[in-house]
Image (cartoon, rainbow, N blue to C red):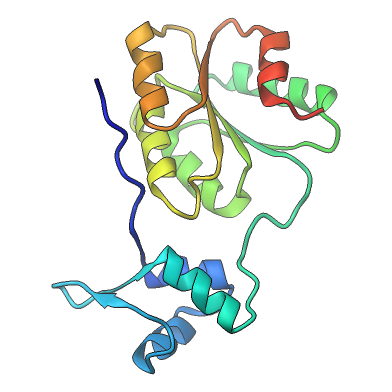
Length: 190
């Protein structure tokens, strides 16, 4: 039996700044003045609890930075460019007003997750470098990203792979070649 790893408890000043839509200097000043509760690590770095940030935002009437678009945003992460482009076209045809981005590896996905802020990630499990399991784990451990729905897609996947992915926080894993009706039903975006 595998246990889910707990969600990351503390945010860095940069993550807080992004969430509050301010500079890291503003976060530092609020922490130094005692307005924003912070913990200091043994190395002297400030860390912030998400609950404290939410409380601070309410007190200061600051809107937290969440996805600004009502359109569904899907990030496709797959090292097979042809399959990724096929999914891109399929989603744009089948889902009204969908925004789609493609990452061809796990490292690029980390950048796109930050800049594109998807609501759903379609994630290949078997990629060189940072594989799908590692990408899913990082997303689900990040309090600013753990709301992203993760759906695995892989050509060679075992039941233990599916169980492992779900234990990391993914909601499902589909096999390639993809069952299009099953994918669209799972996405539930029409």
